[in-house]
Image (cartoon, rainbow, N blue to C red):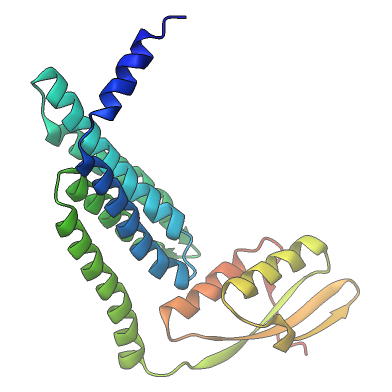
Length: 229
């Protein structure tokens, strides 16, 4: 096997400028900052997703600059444009239409911004990318606080559901409750002829809490029920 190309690549990697590794490190940090905030709010696009997207966009920009330095011609902005197009597909996949409601818009927008930050870092502006990351995280946190300030305290209501007594449904319910830091043991439940009836209270004011109800009704075996307990 011809190992000359491998030797050439190793020599080339040894001559890579240090700032490329700094850019990758900052990209991981920026993605982690945004992803950690998403993780705290129990979003599907959390820490790992944002880190990989931010780092991936940075890698594409670094690669475009390396290819440009080798060939001497080309357009770095073309790869940046392709990153934007690719993020359109990923963002669309995070937006879910469920029972007349659209959820996942904030997650899609956050991923789109994470990719933009990666492009900024890969273009050679890691400090600017870090500042943008801190600003985005500030917005995500503060807007959530303002939401509770203007909408007021939680207002709970009780919903009644029915489902067949089977392990898969119970497992899905346990995962849902644990994901939203709710205690299923506090819900009233009884069984009749293999059918379980449960009363669940949830806040119908704040959007983040409404997502619990949306996810609950997406469990295949769950059905609304009249007050039965």
